[in-house]
Length: 74
Image 1 (cartoon, rainbow, N blue to C red):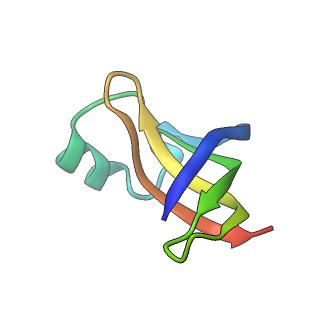
Image 2 (cartoon, rainbow, N blue to C red):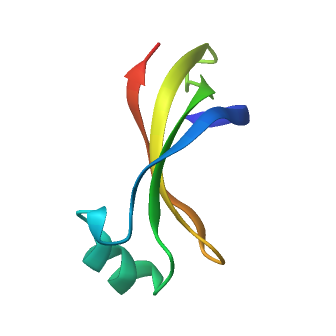
């Protein structure tokens, strides 16, 4: 599974202490201004097909996107 193109309609859905997994993110990836974000992207599946999906991930400046996952297919 891989994102094709760019992620559209990006929104921040939580930041700082509003993130449930904040302690784990800091322990694994380091301190940063962590934000949980969501957006819509075209996903390339392993069988070669493509589908539109809502994706969620965590992001911090200087660290980048981590723990990206498909939340629902559109």
